[in-house]
Length: 255
Image (cartoon, rainbow, N blue to C red):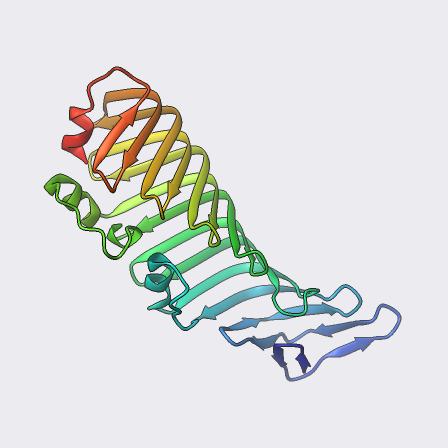
């Protein structure tokens, strides 16, 4: 079954004329140019241009790298990405691109990276990707988050980039158009004995700025070393700015 740029392969389906839907009781395999998705059960709503799927949703995503993509996106595209969830909603009203939403127990994995959430929305029309409800990230290292040509002189920051890092929040968004990452609500960032908490985090990748705001607290071995409304890490200039008059030496040593 071919719907625009989507190919669906199935053993069988039932067509219900009164509702104008296709019911795939034994599931299907859905293929696009960049991905393959398998599900155990699905309904295609013809009038709404929507697909609702459930049970063992699994997507293998493997898009080719492009010179128009950021360094960070090209790094992610080097490795196949697997997405698992309990439910899936595909809105393909747009003729060219879809909006794909994974729901419940969402797990996005690469060999050295993992993201967990209860909801993941991939808006391929606007190039905006949103994760919500118990969002967490685990990275074996975070050096790939920097621009490819960026060299870091500070040895402590260099070490920080090689450490395993975990981040949790209630909401996360990546906007591929302006190359920014935004996290909101109850943010916790951990590396070994270092922990930073705040309410908002914006990573402006092109301008190489990390902006933490909303009760920013830094702890080392469980002891509070820093507390401020805002902390700005300027990666390009390897400097720190804050609204607090507190000396930043402890942060700089730890980072």
